[in-house]
Length: 463
Image (cartoon, rainbow, N blue to C red):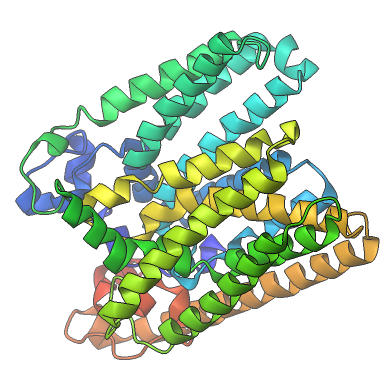
């Protein structure tokens, strides 16, 4: 996948003289010259530099973190053939903006995928700790080092995940101390918190976070926060995640109908209402053009406000459904934690006024996806489809087709891009690109031609 990815925007910045300067000066420089690239995302920036400079290294990094992310989700969902298929489906559940901003953009991938992947690694460790896995307890020294490495490394990518890591490490220890029968604390629980705290201190010791900034801005009033949510962020948080919404509501309908002992007509009715609403809402939104940061142009202000309210109600509905159906199920700690994390990782975007982009929502989305798959797992179980070999084979075949389709589109784009940049006038800087690739949604900012750099392609083509 990485081999056929078309670099854009910041990818070129980091291999330029400015990127080299930041690398040599601890990723700090005057904002007027270096903007938001002067920050404490040390590992993310380092990976960005070397994955753009060396395609083979980029392929290895992409392969490692996509595989590890898939493995973690599969492990958390039960480590079965079914859970593996669910994990593999992740990238096809994305709203298009995640594909463009993260999966198909080098800078987006290296900053947002590793951070949440490393955090999930620790959740896998804690899950096995709760199940009293013999491997965890027999290899305490190794696990202590691994937990420290996971949190320390994970703290140098995205600021809100760095903060969340500290909270997660503290929460696990607090639960272990207060509810002693719940989890047996081990040295690796403390080493994880230590690594998270150290990376937190080192990240935010970067002077860029303490200077007046035109690039970074936070709201201080309740009005600013509500307006931020109502006009922009709620779309990324809820509305545009259409596939998870449909799966959640469909699963809840199946669960409710199958439960003869409880009257769950309210769950069924509300699920139907939300499915109908979000189908209409996404149909409307898809009819509108989008700007360079993927915000709908010409969007009705009244619709935006109503949709923000419905989105808030839908999030509350998910919590209500969890309490109604899963409250007494002690095996669903992951579900309760995922709901909490889905909310917690979104909260910073109430405050942040700029820069605003969907990439920051990715960590929150991963937990929405876990919620979705846990609901789906229960629905398959109550409908006796969880052990259906035919269903598993059918889903596996569908995934192969989807992967082949995605890869084919990226190959076509890659070849079209090589053809358009292989132009003497363009490579000499005398002429700008005029043609787009066939599948613009698989390139950063829908293949914004201004984000391409002729000097990179000249070196790439060795002309």
